[in-house]
Length: 289
Image 1 (cartoon, rainbow, N blue to C red):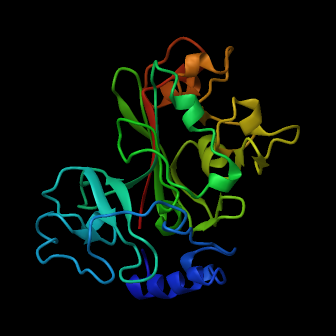
Image 2 (tube, helix red, strand yellow; image 1 turned 30 degrees about the vertical axis):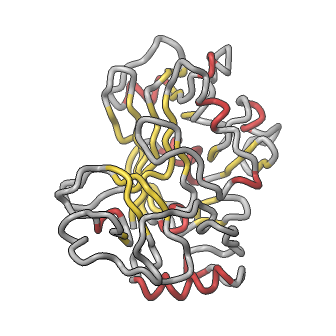
């Protein structure tokens, strides 16, 4: 949040009216969902408008604590699920977000999505998200399970994509910034690569987004989501990594879930499985503001 809570309060009022969105970093109407937040889920936890956050939340987390961003969570608290309210007392509903461990500069990242490898075949169908559901939270905030919290795209301004291989080695494969998101087609506004692989940034962040029933990727001869087992995500033409499908036969790969180009994996010191697209333990996208 680079311009303060007042900017968010004014922006939130515009969002309620389904009108202006430029102040929130958007240039298309963004509608709040009945009973939910900015395309996300209605979150409990007290605090916020009408409740007030208990005193001392800046020093110790207790029931009812609400934070504007993950970076406001006390450094003494371990990573976990916290209640966030990016627009303070504005009309946006609070949401539950997984906040990671404090970084060296004392900040924290919020988990936008997480795809995990699993032998039960549950990961691939999880990511078959239809266009109408593109702004709806899905799954529990956790690094141990599949999770999608699109409301964080509204607040987020800095992003980090992280991959953990089967052996447990973790690597940041991309760092980027954006000025918001156009919710009509889910493209991020003014994306700029800060670090990591250029092709991954272009194909998995800076270009299109596709679901089984919506095609905004840059593939000229088809829909990337439809071509890859219905998996919804940001696509170029088509992917360096996929949240639920392989690029080797069989594409569905027993429903395992996340795969990444082996060339990219090995470039970042991650292990590979001997195929062109390697199974990984998880792929996570983080944001902060």
